[in-house]
Image (cartoon, rainbow, N blue to C red; front, side, top):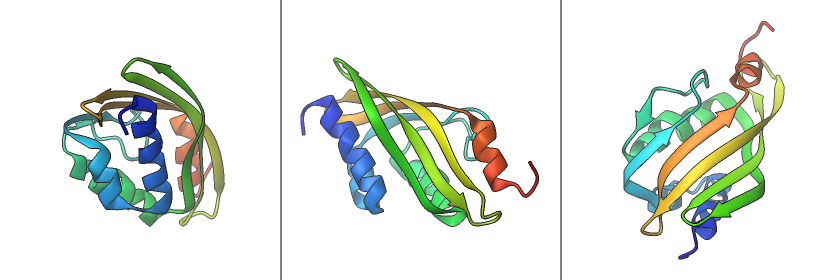
Length: 133
């Protein structure tokens, strides 16, 4: 798994399978992970792989049924990978479904995911989680 796109694909596959050890295995120990400001799970830049589990993956499992982050296309430039795709899921609190496009910008270093930046319409995600529109 030396190619940056392979590392990114491994991350999405591990998330889809709920394989937390494999998620952690592809994250760089000196991580820089930033969710989009306004996203329900945004809390600044995370610097430890376990933070991705505790502050993102576990809350996603808590709040959503059938949550998925599915990349539809990739743009690769050296160690940088951009994935374009969609978030899907049904809010456990409201039973509202969502399908929201995303762009993820990854930087791979030493065969691990070193940097992540997320771009999405956070309002659509928030609306699905709340009982009012």
